[in-house]
Picture 1 (cartoon, one colour):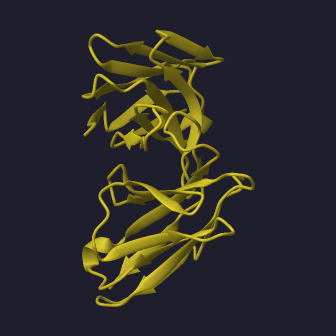
Picture 2 (tube, rainbow over the protein chains, first blue to last red; picture 1 turned 60 degrees about the vertical axis):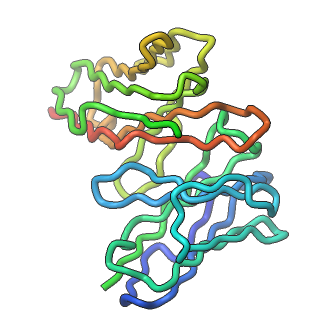
Picture 3 (cartoon, each protein chain N blue to C red; picture 1 turned 30 degrees about the vertical axis):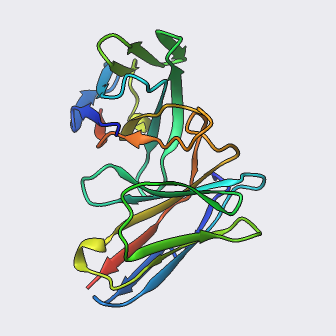
Length: 114
Length: 115
């Protein structure tokens, strides 16, 4: 158990809809990262928050947005969903801000867009 | 930005044999290279990492080597066991340079250890 909690584990929705994925980081971790893993694809970095502030942005679509709340949990909002958005979405956390330490991953939220 | 290539995409070995997974990176400023293991239905988990001031690091049956000149690094698993079967990801980053430094992952290697 990594200590990172993601909900929901599975989500099925239709094209054009909007969903929200939630992540609670490990106790004490200040950074939250979101990654997308499509079939046979690696982990694509979407966005990082550190202590409530956006820290780094990757290949995140404009239809997607995220935030980190004062209690450090984070939400990833996906809107105007398309079939190609079907993927596993992982949240990870770390104590620091940089990329030179261990990331602790949750078990992911599997999104299926029909 | 950084680009990490990983080979092979699938690897099948017999129990007890060794497995080698190779990665190359493009940004010579990258200085941190972790390896993550993802078991079925779970999130990736760090198994070993290496920094650019070290050429090799070992942890029991796992070792990682780094060649900064050639910009490639490799994961070596010896005496493979069935529980080593998983998807392995390499990654690279510029570490904590004071600015946002994200990990760039390779596309993964599916390792199958057969009896």
